[in-house]
Image (cartoon, rainbow, N blue to C red):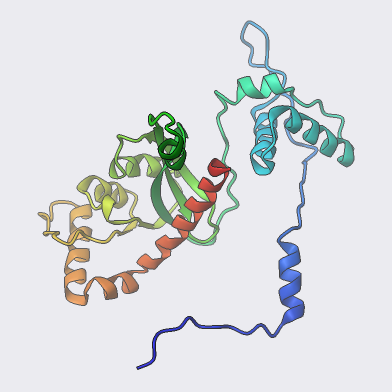
Length: 275
């Protein structure tokens, strides 16, 4: 019996393949002249803000995207505005540093066709302390501070629709209802896909309250709940289907494999933190 070997694919459309590789390096930045760059007066006493939250978020997005310090970010945005012919003033580095602490980030969303299929996951990010190898090799301080990021993305567009940052002592399941609260109440949610850590009554009830289907694998020792609510009934149906079909067939039948997309999104989020 021959051993397993990975499948090898032979590229035949070299012209299209070459153009696709070139498009990976293309970059286009648009500034809408109708954008509210200057802050609107609040009517309160004291000095008013000069720049709007959209202007601060634009500059900080450039900073994170290209990995630049604040001073270089200011010069970079100034050069872009000069190229596009806009005479807008750019916030200095001290303004960016001060405003980023309290900035209310607005997550743009292009929208998908049909109901929203939400994929949820969480991961830990080290925010302070030396790396494990450095601490073991050079005897650095072993105290580390971790933060946990919880996100929900659209399956079709892969855009982040909900995000929460918590301490490392907060579990995954308690944050699912808060992530669902970030989705507008008038927006239809088709399904919510998450791993087995979210197999709790609170999560199923929150999903059922939004009239969505829960694609959450039951625990291996899962037992049916008393069907007193819509969330419990939906969860019992998943338990029975998993027992009848088997866990592998149930995952394929329910479309649970789609959750791999949110894991890939997590990798994209963690890459800038490791630079």
